[in-house]
Length: 421
Image (tube, rainbow, N blue to C red; front, side, top):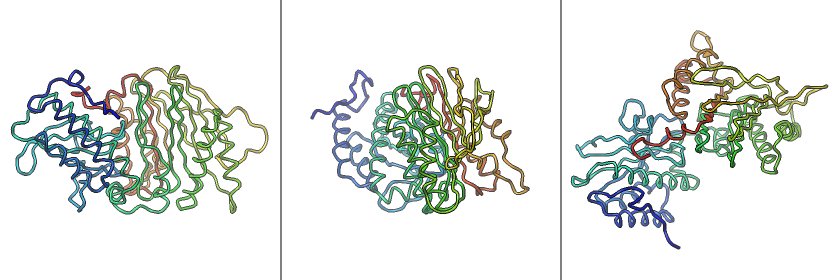
């Protein structure tokens, strides 16, 4: 099997590091990655890049996106995202130059799996290595390869999972995180990003999405309660709707009915899940959506919230309507550049010490400011979650979920460093 690597024509001519050296480096990493364990990733990458006058350390971001932890066999101190150069590079998704504790030159390079922010790569430069755009493009290719490898090892490494959770998860949280897709996904037509808090104790909240060709499936769920039963019922709702989609069902009302059927079959008292289900045609911008007892999504246009998508609700999933009801699927024609925000009531109903809600007005104001400041969608949600946590004294009393969708032909460009595009 031949290995196709980036060529000099694609990435330019590199001062001090020949193309064949880079080719051997990438080939070695690919080969060694088949056998490496998760806790040895930094060691493996560092051994490979030393052949071209570099050093490397992989740092993994935690689910709360507060710290970056070195991926080493033995625990090392984490790097805070707030107030550090590494954290700024993570937030802005740019390659930033700095120095290490001994005064040596380093590059902080974001590590992405696709467009999911996985962590950072700290690359040290020998004295004779020139920091120029060509080197940074090669480092960006390296970090992308590292991102893919990290995520393949995550499923088989408890060490990586402990670093990612940055503390123990509750059993319901462990269940739900295994069900969820990556927090961020992007194409040239759409950017999707999500956030779930409290990451370590979440029980009934969840999000879901799927992207195929021109169709984007979206969902946010909020199961009744805050215990294992809430997590199980939410997991049933996700599974029923995914199973229906994968069987070829495209009608949102029919998918909701599948979830009803599975939930009502469960023994015991009444159980239900509020939800928003949606489908976006990325060619036309036509959005179909269904509200099942859930807060209506917000539509932003040109940086301003222009409306709630408040088509008449149907009953929550697991509660069958009695008597005749009207159409439950609404439609909205989006315009290029529109942003859609789906959320659970754990956001708006977060209370401060005086009992005041975070509220829809604060949510709208924060979202509008982030849009006007042109923050990438993942960073918008990270900062919004931090604001909600700060409002509630750093400890949410209810699960909180956010799912943001940009229908845009340019939003994906914000997901990579400007100097490697």
